[in-house]
Length: 416
Length: 80
Image (cartoon, rainbow over all chains, first blue to last red; front, side, top):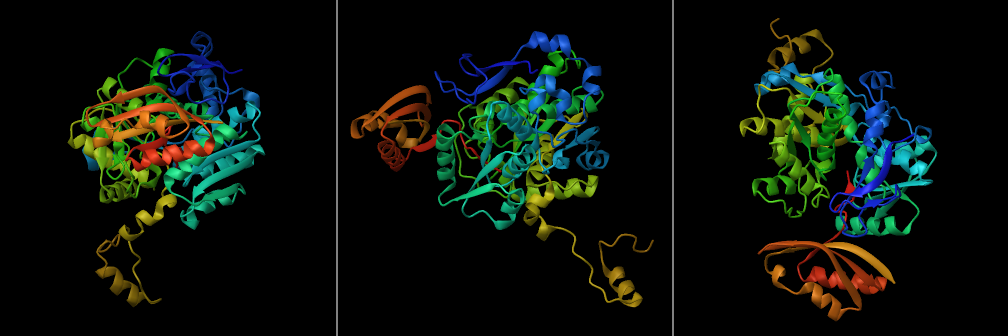
């Protein structure tokens, strides 16, 4: 049975029942799941966690879901790779890559949707919904299929056909909204109030957000029950960033790892960097922007948790970076060439952001650092297709091969 | 009757305009401010609007025409 006790307002601390609510009725502040910490403390041990399934559900004691309602696609327990070659390239001593491209729908969204869909099932919902341009819709559609629930996905009318496919294959209802991005936002916010649907990041957002904490839990466990000294994570709404920090804090609070300060560094693309801009301007007032970047999965111009992400940076002596689109592509290539991991553009933002953070002194290259790679590269292949190795054309003869191979500058093994 | 929770973001000269007061005067809509933070050239206000659904839509379109950004209270909900 879950140890979640209520929803609590992050602004005024008022408490609400564990219902499909996302903002405080009094001050309109965001709601967050609260837990019976004493009961968790009395229950959890390293051994109990280690004996659990190799998925996010090994951390069920920390999640707002009863076991009977789990929608299980075997999400999580993704590899933590020691990235020595990339560390060398960046002049670092110890770098790790948390490779969340290995999730069932190839992005970290599976963590949050796994928790949201399970909780939605527990609350009696029959339909999962979301507004999305890619990863989230893929994950919602997949989880609804797995759970035998209906799925309804709202997309902007001008979304490329290729991006719709990753959801369409699971047979959700897809609604193409003829309007601006803001119109889609507004429509879905209204629908969430009026329909008996679990909009995963609107009316069940407090539960959805909890899934991100499992990234920190896994990293701590995979590092041999310790927290890294530094973390670089991409920021869209800022929710993932704040929940990773919270995950490390909780493991320290429950005595599962030693108390170590974890410096939190956020990464955004310059074309959509409202949180980094606020950080650089030393204000907590975030000015919404119109996104213009190839890093579409981070293109949230009005980030719901930006203010809280800034507070985390300040509290942890962290920082925030913003990188150009060419740097994003270079980041993707560096990660692929050095470590064999093909990330989507958000991963390029993370790696380029890491490099910038080192240059700016926000990251100490001698300290243990973890970079979070949140989605697989095939989702944004268009961003790099012009920038990668091209084939060497040859005829089917040995002579043709030898001639072409000798002239190809990038050919492996020439002369050896 | 309908209720809408929204966030107004003001930049530049829009900060000086009595936009919320005028919404209450020009439209049959009741405004109820819950949170706000306003600086000299930038500010945001989170508020609730009560009224007929179409009248709220008209009021919000008018507010946007004044150069004020209007968002759902929970920020952007369209995610990748």
